[in-house]
Image (cartoon, rainbow, N blue to C red; front, side, top):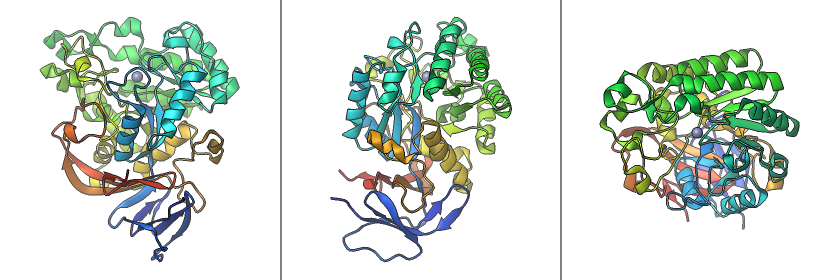
Length: 440
Ligand SMILES: [Zn+2]
């Protein structure tokens, strides 16, 4: 049975402006828009007074760990964390065990996603087993609806193989997303290479390990004409190179994570492995450059790189602990904070968290429906799929890892006071989060 919902009293965030209006959702789509609409009989009422109503967020970079890593997260718990964070769609990274490099594994993750609270879109691996040796059957995976491919966790190290992958992807109309770190330069480093890493006695991963691969892949993307997406870009020079390539017309986009524009390498000074991540937290100059770039609209998307880990993977010496940190339930607040808190431009906020990532993941089209997925990142016009989020931008709350919907607890923001809150999340016309609480 299809439910009817009215969102009352909010400010809609459209692609270029804002507008006060109510929304009525019926048959999974936005059915009516207008000021002071009557409440339909039997409708669920969502209060949006004093809040923004926009397209629900889309994460290009979530590690949901299933299959193989269910001690850290499952598709169901990762999806719940996403709904709490205001997301309607997550791109699930393929570094599972086994990797998402075959039709059976991709179909399995799609099915787990259909049973979850939001829409899960698996990314396919570029190479078999993510080993960087032989190309995965991207054509077969594309037939299932996958359009985004990556070996994330590592980058494709071999330039010749990456070039062939880009040519193959171009022919199929796919996007390749790269974890840019040259392993011959990153080595066994476990934090940013700097004076601080020397003082701490920890091996460093230098900025050049990322920048060398960004430079290489921008040239390969230009040469092949294929679409490239740079995952978790973390340095000022990487950003400058991507912007320069975009100005030349190279089909490249880039994401940054909240941790890379919020936390500096100083967080590692206490040897707490919660702050270990690849690429590593950088120095304040890079962090500031990313914040300025985000504010100026130079960064295409904010993605979480949500990386849950079971406690035993993190409770180890810093250099032995697994890299990665949670992100889905804090990304909105940290992005809002970086954009100016209550003064943030709502159009830019929804652009980086929803509209552009939806576009990059090819989730804006209604023809996604043939794969059982709805359209995300929409313009809130009548007839569009109701993937919506209602957010407060003035309330504050303190992060408590025991309150997280994620199965894992490795948040680097424990005890931090965050601005803003996700009030309601609507996924494909169904209210999944109401007043911050799950509806089922
Ligand atoms: Zn990565």
